Length: 323
Image 1 (spheres, rainbow, N blue to C red):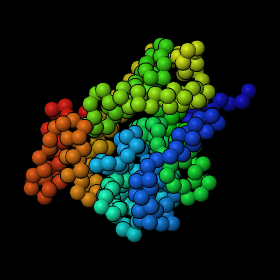
Image 2 (cartoon, one colour; image 1 turned 180 degrees about the vertical axis):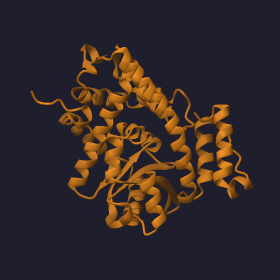
Image 3 (tube, rainbow, N blue to C red; image 1 turned 135 degrees about the vertical axis):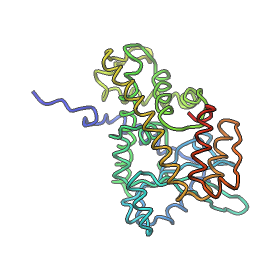
Image 4 (cartoon, helix red, strand yellow; image 1 turned 30 degrees about the vertical axis):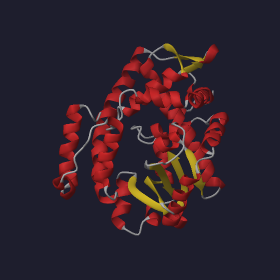
């Protein structure tokens, strides 16, 4: 009798890969392509792919916001002349940078994270923490790929992210009947809780409702890879299949991810102080934008962004501004 492969090792459903390829190839505003060209120029021959995700993608324009990109490179040694940036990126991916591009009288802003293709594939498929697979289970756009081989690898990684997301979050629902909306709200709620984020508790529901049609289709396409965990029912519903022991294990895993996420968030914020231009102003702007809480950027915070930033973060955590 042939050995049954674990879900992470099973062949991905062709329909899921095709759907992620279709989603990631949808048209975007030309403003995003201006920033993409700047990233292509910055990374040259080391560049494998550029992905757009986040709030500006959902609003279909940059406006006064900051676009979110992932830059996938072939290796950190090729991507950076600076040795310390290579070490930072290999030690705790990704590195995060800020980009501004002027186009006539307009100025476009972006935050971009750099990760190797190998780390991107591992992060969307195997990582315990949801940092990458939670982001890229959600809709994104592939704005550049070096060649068809790189494009296929990205599409497969995106499909793996969906399977990993669902496989990791479904047991929390226990044995129950749910539709795609409930399934994805549950998943995003769990993954948001695993990072220090300023978004309100209702954010997961809002995000799912914005792209509910896409999430419903992704769930159906991913279902064959979740045999024994998710059964398709009539009327757009699913039967979530798990037992008490598996559900308790899943809840424990999410508690561990929440603790891990707080530690990783602090480490990444500390690292960003050395890679992200004007990271203090950006963090204060993002917190105010998502919560309405204004963070005063004091001279002490500017002089000692790491130590003073930890103190500010602790205050925001105690107030419930960060979760």
